[in-house]
Image (cartoon, rainbow, N blue to C red; front, side):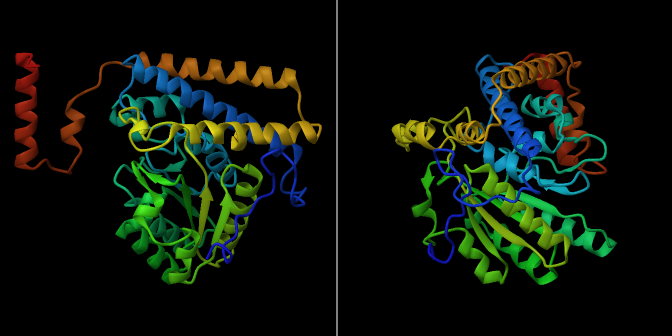
Length: 356
C-alpha cells in the first residue's frame, strides 16, 4: 500500500525543490505568508507552554513540529468555509482567523473560549476523539444542499482513525458526496500508543479505498506539498466531486499535553534527530534562502510583531472579569435537568464553605 500511496513531497529536507511548483498557486507572497504564519503559531505554542508552567492557563496541548501541516492546510481555505478542529489544531484556527485572546481563554478553562469571531465557521475544539468527523460531513452536506460551494475540513490525529466516528464520517460523506476534506496529521503516536500497535494498515491514506474516495499521503513537514494537495482536494470538493482523505505524515516534538511525560513511551532522541533534519520551519527557511526570498530584517520584524501580538492577547485574556460559574450548568440543556440543578446547588454550597 505504501507503493500505491507514495509520500508526496515538493521540498526535501535540505530545502531543495524536487518537483516544479505551480507558480500561480504558490507565489512569493504566499511563501512569505506561510513562513510568517508558521513563526507565529510556533511562538504562540511555546508561550502557551510557558503560561501553563506558570499556572496562568490550564493543561495545554502543544503542536510544535506540526506547523507546516496546520498552516498549509488552513491557508487553503476561504473565510466562508467550515473548520472542525481537535484540541491540538489551534495553529490551524489561528491561521484561519481565530482570535488569539479567545484561544487563550479556552485554555484558561472558560466557555467563552469556544466562541469564534463573528462570521467565521469554527467549531469548538473536539476533545472526544473523532466525534467531529460526522459533524464536518453534515455541515459540508448542508452547504451542498444550500447551493453554495463552501467546504468543510476536519482535523484529526492517527488515533482517530481507529474510532468508529472516523468510519461513519467518511462513509456518509462518500455516500452524499459531501464537499469535505478529512485532514489527518499522522504523528505516529496516539498518546502513548505507537501506530503499529493500533492499526495493521501500512498507511492511513489507504483507508480511503473502503469508501471509494481519493486518498493522498503527503510529507506533513513540507508546507508546499501540504498546501498544493489541500488546494487540489478543496477544488474537488467545490466542484461537486466529494470528499478526500489526506494523510500528512509529521512528528510532534513535545508531549501529548503538558500533563503527559513522553519519556515513558517514546525515545526522545528521535525527536531531537527529527528537529535537526526535518523541521518544517527550518525547511521552508532553507528553501527561501535558495530561492532568494530570505530577508533577515523582514524575519526579525515579523518575530517582534508576533511576539507583541501574543503578549497583547495574553494581557487581554488575563484582564477578563472573573468567570461566571453559572454558565457551566445553565447552558447544557435548554432547561436544566434535576441532576444538573443538584450539581449546581452542591457546587455553590461547596464554594461558599470554602472547601478545598
